[in-house]
Length: 229
Image (cartoon, rainbow, N blue to C red; front, side, top):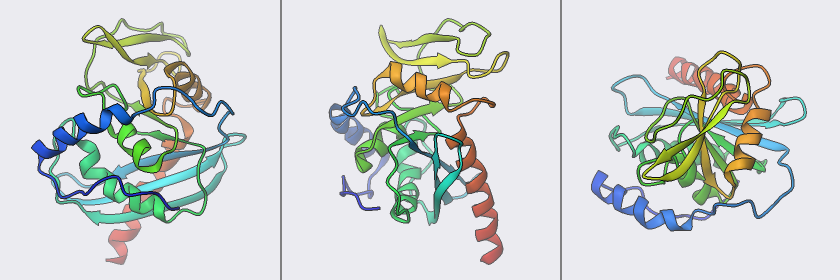
């Protein structure tokens, strides 16, 4: 898969924050293409604690039955440190290498992380969406910022995630009686459509199928790359 270069990666944390503030205005907060996405990619990255060697992967699956259409992974050493709010600068170089290995261009991407539910409104979902120019949704397992009222306990329960009087995402219960996920726009999505898609992608488990499949794929790939080393 081909895509344009957005910027260089040789940045300090201070420069990365400045770049986030520069790029956030390019995020599209609606769905230009209203056709329901059929090929949906999930992405994830894995690395041992205190290690800079990152295994990043993408799995493209079909929305009809969640069968895997294609998958790709890359292993890179990231020089960027772990800094809360700057996750994309650590993980995206590997994820982009994984996307280069794909022949299939997905209709939408679900990221295991935040989109606009971020202090500077520019989480990894926004960053990846801009690089690839593909509709992207952030689906975080934990909250990075914002306040909310607990959603109803039933599947489909949701409530606004609010930061500085702005709705930055939705807290979504994908399974009755389990912890919610934190949904937000990454790029080229509106929040209502993003939440509806995430719920449709989570028919059985807390995490949407594309992310769940990507998580398993990346962990298997990391183990395989370690054995081959």
